[in-house]
Image 1: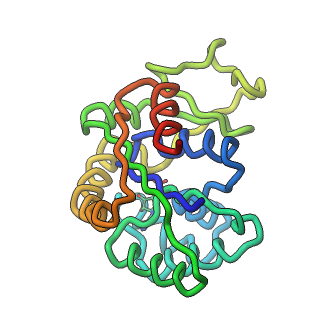
Image 2 (image 1 turned 90 degrees about the horizontal axis):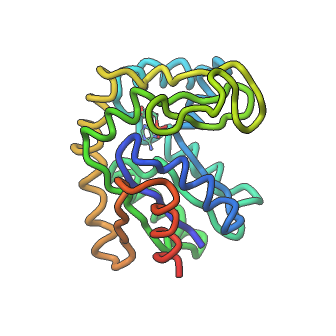
Length: 214
Ligand code: AMP
């Protein structure tokens, strides 16, 4: 099954994608994670993307589409994949359809996680990740059980994303409303789009998504 998870930054796409990855045994393809890996590795593409990401803008469609095309061609995507953070523009959605139909494939389902902007800002500005195992936390809603120690791996180093600042969040939300929200009707018209309430707690959102999958 080929699925797209939509939602503004901080909606919980990554968290839910990790759970669905296990449940459905298909890989999560996060363009944000791929770009952050390129930034960390210091590749030419990473260097160009870094500035745009820190400003809350969008990396060019050509780069992103090329990246996803290569990733989808890999072996582990044969039985399906879960897109997280792609497509983000109408041009990306069209390019995705073309690359899939060229191989007799299609998107089966799109799921939009809806959360209001005030909640998103609060979530994003308080989130942090274990540097060792990648487990995600939130200073307010989901702190570590022991202060400064990761619940999952016992790690004691944590990091925050360079673009999780109040200023950058504002432009990321604006970018979402201006460029990504207009992509949603494209899938609504195909009759494959589903909306879940992302204001609920993490487990309830997972349950709502499972209902859609059934
Ligand atoms: P994310 O982790 O999905 O929030 O993405 C972090 C940043 O990476 C975004 O704010 C964009 O600058 C960039 N990015 C991720 N996915 C895309 C995409 N599909 N198209 C353009 N830029 C993207």
